[in-house]
Length: 547
Ligand SMILES: O=P(O)(O)OC[C@H]1O[C@H](O)[C@H](O)[C@@H](O)[C@@H]1O
Image 1 (cartoon, rainbow, N blue to C red):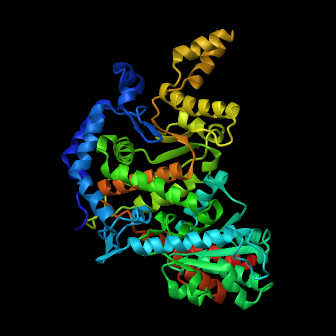
Image 2: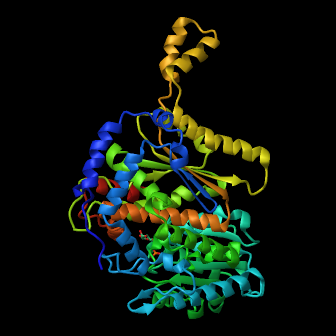
Image 3: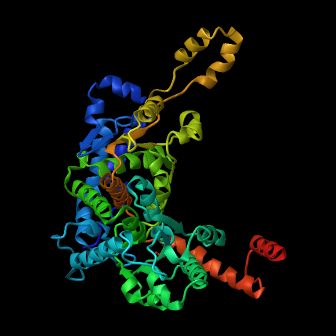
């Protein structure tokens, strides 16, 4: 059964939302709080160790009801069933989308082409577990008989961002192995990493779903040549492993078949950290913690599948985001984690959200005339407060933001934690309330300024407020809660893609640049510059003349 193909703008709910938008547009959220003492309680979802408060949004109960009608009219429920059951919902690539199967319980039965895929997944998990244990406990050794000290993940896009985000987010849980990530084709990246390594004690994981990505293969070759300066060809099998769907190509590269960890076409690159692509995660935090990450994601999957839409975190967050994107016409969304560990979280989400929902052709093949995927960006608080919050508070753009915080600090430093959390909570309060003219006036008068100075400063010190935020408050950062959080955003992406009537699981938009880079590389090598626009030709000549 194919996905529904309903233009959201043709629904009754969409029209009602447009009218409703006109009536609500000028309203200040503070008035909505004043009108309903129960607002915050009603607009909070508490589930396990998650507390999601979405009351600081420019919505009323009616808004939410209409958005829920939109979900109903676009047949979200049906689409969720197709997603989890393994139907080929990635229609443009004719594939199922089953990252959820990677974290499903062992007794689940999910079929692809008539065959249950869970046994294959378990087999690879066992392989990951055994390999992890042998590397971590030092029983598997390098070519000179020494235990491994460093692990290098060579991959890009989904074969880099997920693992590197999780490894840095769970740094607290790390063992003695040092982890490194090489992704960029920029040779300075790989060389800076190599500088820190000892070939005798370093394990390399070449991660590429297709095993045909220029960056990854080039970096892997460079590292292999460097390695062979100190080791023999037969030592490669001790130090290089691969993760790929393309077993043949990985073998051609010189990787021993036993060292290849398979993944499958029904795992999208940007959703693959739960598979063997997460080997570097398992190695550096241990398999037990890796399995807890998967368990957390699985729990969020169940919540998403079974909770009523109005109490369903991914659904509600997706709907609110559509409300801003399509009715307020906001273009971006900020992700502000109040945890330094989540330093790479928004970078990771940039790929999963923008590569999935940055589309302009609908599921009927027609050009879309409404906005789809938002631009996603952000940095951890409190650093971001001292960088770009000025624009969020007083700029001309409306930027809905997700504030993510953890109640308990991992190093149990109460003094810092209380300060961190007060900033976390204060910022959403400030964005909501703003600061009125009257309050600014009072403050300036207390400073005993002249009337002239007061008049001059007054407009600059006013904060409009009414800036929307969601607060995702989690008890503690653990492998399990991180798994839940990532899965929450994965499902938010899914919901939005369904409602926008786009295909979220292909990425044809990344192909053109790759192809042209191939042509230009040939031109640079052959010194013949043909068929380019003048700007491109000038750039090529500039490069050639300087090198
Ligand atoms: O894992 P690979 O096949 O090497 O692909 C790596 C990445 O490159 C592609 O260009 C896609 O845009 C990404 O979705 C993918 O994750």
